[in-house]
Image 1 (cartoon, rainbow, N blue to C red):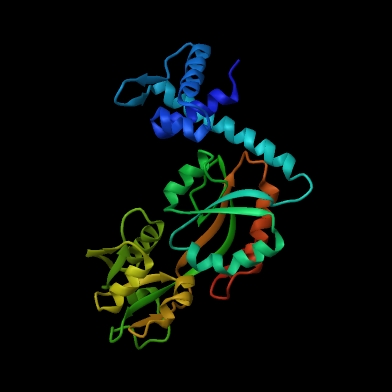
Image 2: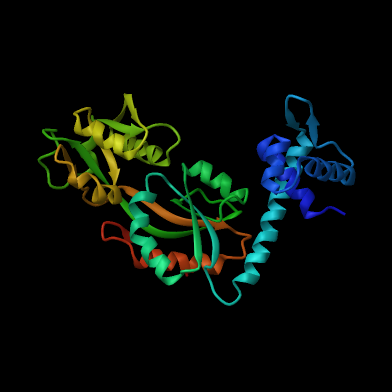
Amino acid sequence: MISLKQLRSIAALSDTLHFGRAAERCHITQPALSAQVAQLEAALGTVLVERSRRRVLMTPMGRDVAERAKRILRDVEELRELTRRRDQPLVGMLRLGVLPTLGSYLLPHILPALRSRYPDLRLYLREEPANRLLVELQHGELDLLLVSWPRREEALVSLPLFFEPFWLAMPLGHRLASASRLSTDDLAGEQLLLLEQGHCLREQALALAESAGAEEETDFRATSLDSLRQMAATGLGATLLPALYVKEEAFEDDQLAVRPFAAPVPGRRIALVWRRTTTRADEFRLFAALVREHLPDVVQPLAPPD
């Protein structure tokens, strides 16, 4: 029989590639972990780990088994959570992944109400680019994501939350700074400052720039929204900023002109995303309802599907 201890051992070893650190993660001794892995290899009739004095390598079968073990352990944990939550929703641990260009500007509007309504919820937050968050969600390392509306994937459920407009931020004296409201056609010929590779906001801004006849300023790329704002303020060019960031940060910068767009307004759709196989879908819909209730007025709530 294959045991949960064996599955935890191979999963931890796959993550750490070190018997000592894997044993610490599993709260057992290193010989005990080695024994668990050996027993699993014997039960499966295959080698999962290549061992040497200097390093640990997972065999191709070992990597596959470790990924399957993580999914099984995740399902077992969800079963335990299901029984703990039978009388009360949104209690215990919730692992939420959020875009770096969103979390710091949205969550302050949400978290006080979340703590008040669900005091027994323990929220773990991780900020990373969308592609990385989606991988961690599918591997069971995260439970729920707040991300730009992703591509349709059979294994995931996407629940629309709100539309966040883009604003144009530019140095004082820029040719467009005198306008009170802009058209996307006004961007024609501009060299726009963008985030570095890996941010979905970069891809959205680049698509808008290309459709409007603008180009990327390739000599400078920013690592964060703060960097974009500061680069624009020092005169390097114009950039697109999401409305929540503008509300919290850019309006207060007296070296910067920020202007909204007229309809059709460019922007991004933000969704709540979870695995289709989760047992917590009803809880996540409650979470979505709370988010919609406490959105600031610079974004537009999106109605949930029927």
